[in-house]
Image (cartoon, rainbow, N blue to C red):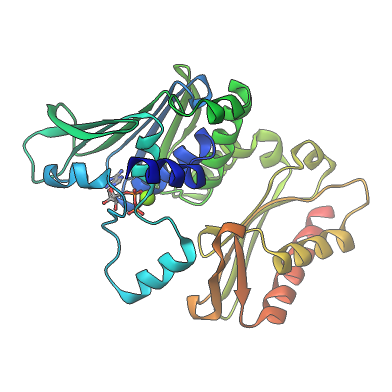
Length: 327
Ligand code: ADP
Ligand code: MG
């Protein structure tokens, strides 16, 4: 079973950032409003994620580390989603098969916290009492310590950390209701505070994308029936240095969609000079029945039932925002 886990790990765990992704998604699934992330040496030495979510009951700790131990399949719809998403209930098992993993958790109903430790091929999960508030901490030490080929494949500490930073940025820009702290080698690199008011949201935007982006950003806010577009676009040359900021969320999920990209690019092309560059953080909200997100989750693509309508709405909304900004 351990070998199977290690093979599965090859699919799920490509690099430290993939571990962080799985763990943070678990924290969000558990309803956390606060997530603290500690990274050492680009994640190859340590990845520690602490949340204030609902926690894992003592008698489910060992189970959480075993394969197909998802607690999240309850309906047929879920099952269908799993078929398309793959790898459900495998993340922790896979990660623990290629690291030294400690899972510590406490639920509201428990007086004390418990810790489970798993290391590489060793399937015996030992439980120990621990000190921990309600919530969960996952500690992943020495990633790929037992798969040298994979360990060798890792890039520099800086590059691996940048992948993590980028991932957290994307999550931070879609979950303003969750406070996230990201540390590298003991130093706070990003501190995303929860944001409700427009000013707080702009502060978070600046934390993620830099104050330069914020300075040149125009607010977009437009609705057409069930369709809503909001966010920020950059219409200035100042955006040039930020040319990698092109984020788009559909119903809260990060997407890289051809139709949306095309509409955005067209709007920019018709509004901007050629020396200006497209930078944006945009949120599209649409009736969930009007969109299929399961088309290809790995590619972050969506299929809108009314593709033309969505395209033109985005195009026109952005074009008018950009033209107003240019005045
Ligand atoms: P999946 O997320 O697909 O269910 P995982 O291997 O990522 O599979 O996690 C296994 C199980 O462990 C989850 O279903 C959940 O019950 C539990 N779990 C993992 N991380 C957390 C967390 N941070 N808070 C609460 N429960 C968690
Ligand atoms: Mg998971």
